Length: 126
Image 1: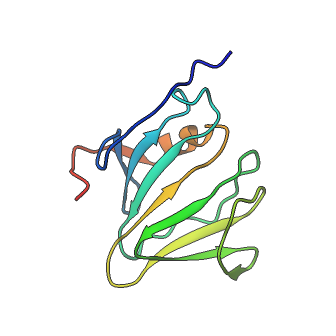
Image 2: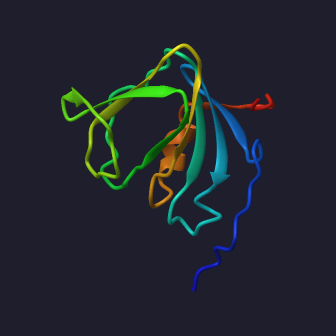
């Protein structure tokens, strides 16, 4: 039986982590809170930040851009991305300002990868 319950986080609430290369992640739902079903991350990428080309072989991922623009490179070309598995992908923050997006990788295992490129943040999100 699941121990996961309702998770409610207001804007700016959740553990904040600086991510290598220029970005602030705010954990909106952790793997521990969802029984490993998924995590939800608000990702504020600074202008020009780019993720390395990478894959998520055991996870699905959905990106929802809330502010700004991102250029997504996947499957050898630039295009919009929906939830897919085994997709080698990279992102680049474009436009004239930082962007903000939500990340929802499934199965919660993303947290291990997140831990490898983060630093704690006490910085407000706005």
